[in-house]
Length: 524
Image (cartoon, rainbow, N blue to C red):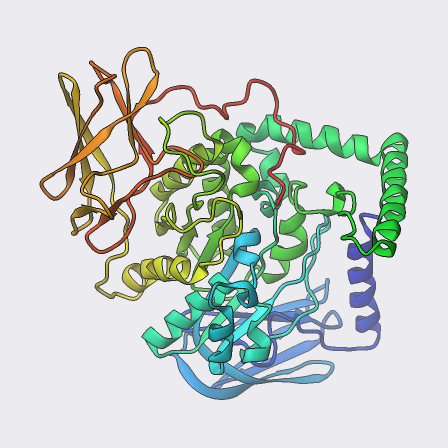
């Protein structure tokens, strides 16, 4: 059954070719936005050998459909233009793609906190009511988990209206609205997020298999794949489905909420390569400015591996697109779980945040710190407005040349003298301030025994904090905001929270002692 989507797609292409029909993918359609100031590919399929002509904005191109029926042309760079234009493609048939704008195009990707719809945002009702924005265009890629590379999907570009934005990504919409209002250009947003998806599902499977860093992950993946495809595995799944159907019918009859269906791992968002093949691949090559990303919850138990996996994902996407090192900005995991005012200790989420921060070593990357925007009892915090506002600052400064605060303060250096630790920060042109109370909360110290104790933080000047604890006579390391849901209050003078950090290199809690199982994901 896993080959069904691919076979259907192949059948569709062959049938269309026999009918001498010009095919253009959904990502290239009415109401789309083309990326300004770069050579944007336009592609499709037709009968092999068919002459193809493409006309747009005074440009004329010709090519020939290849042996596989595919053809591609690249438009010359064009400036932003909010006047609707028509792109014409002539082959065995003729197609007109209408209402095309030129501006800024961004991919909005990740798991459920990117997927969370505008209707469920904290102020979603107000945001929706004022969403009549004809120059903001949206398209959503449907969820399809498969190992077979897909070339197209069912979907269409739409202008932003109160009706079309309700089900769109809240973070994506708010990010795009800011861009459009600030830059005064059309904006196109591609939403290809999938709740609970793991990072390895967003990468081409063969790329993971060829990298020795992910051998344990892929060995476990192959083992689980074989188990689920076996006769025993299929029988177990069939039994689970039957039990679920029975329980669902009973719950409905009693007026109760039906249970969730059994996880279809082979066709879901956990299987390495699945989301890449089914969701991302049909969009690869479309001209974009960059990517915004909100994901990591499902990889928290594998934070140690995520430190390699996440930058690998970014590098692979850039390689797949062939656009160079396009901008890639992400949201660091927000605070979640019970609020702890405890010494820094073991925390999957703290280690995942650290892995995200480390990925900033790659060029043209940036991180929006949201350690203060979470909800302890809800993995999907509803305040996506502030998330988008922090995220959009990165491209406004780095890619569009504005002068705004955009970078959260980060740990810079540590000096220890006697029983005190002096922590210096890079504030990127700003200073530091504790919020709410004079003391800087969220620090912990440990000595040679590696036992962590809460510590008092006292401001020293504008970018240093003196940290001490009566229980640590000779500190060797400092941690800040190192917990699932830490109590911390240190911000830049411009209102951006300090990035969680640790100065030690102690063994990570998530460092695998045995090959990781792909089924141990954090379920949302």
